[in-house]
Amino acid sequence: MTKEDYGHHISQQFNAELEDVRSHFLAMGGLVEKQVSDAMHALLDADSALAVAVQANDHRINAMETRIDEELVRILARRQPAASDLRMIIAISKSLTDLERIGDEAAKIARYAQALCEEGESPRGYMETRHIGNQVRLMIHDTLDAFARLDVEQAFKVMQADSEIDLEYKTATRALMTYMMEDSRYISRVLNVLWVLRGLERIGDHSRNISEQLIYLVKGADVRHISYDVIDKKLHG
Image 1 (cartoon, rainbow, N blue to C red):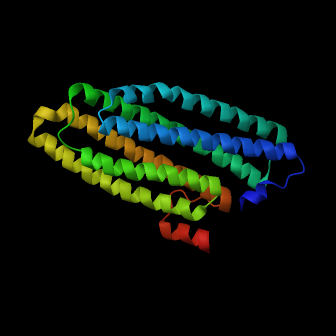
Image 2 (cartoon, rainbow, N blue to C red):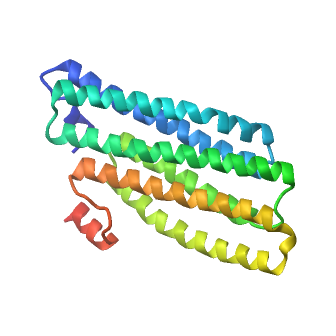
Image 3 (tube, rainbow, N blue to C red):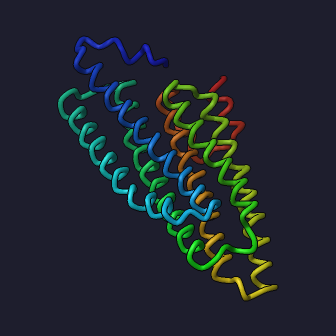
């Protein structure tokens, strides 16, 4: 399955509709990626104004999701697509939900960043947050890039990266919980950092989900809930 496979319909209008919906999906992804990046900058730079702006921008992501949903419904109703075209519509429809939820997590991170700006920074957790945040931003970028190029190998790498983030998240959480037990003065601030880390871990999960949908789109294989060895066989077997 390649991008060229989507350019061989009798109806050129159908081709245009499919390409439009894919372009709108990737544009929404670009905005979501920026929201996550801005939320992290707001936290790490103690930029309260940027944190407020990220929260205010969330409605744009919701509006884009609604618009693309409507486009998908129109295509299903008018074209009754089959085979690879139907897989593309299903994959985009499911991935839309994950993109919107990444946007929600970015808005939450911005809200915790704003609270930390007002209460004072947490004495712990920023190094871990910066590191995991950078990894998660790379995951989002690589997922969207894979979707644009229909690159299943890159999508598989994103799935594997999510496992590393899960491990680092658990390690960072244990360290911060221990710190709070040792020094109760900063419980509120450290809790805000913990919620940020939880949001980043969820963003990683949603990025993985999108990569799973891309593999389904290109290979027709459902790779949810199975081991990496089995996925590797499906991709290369």
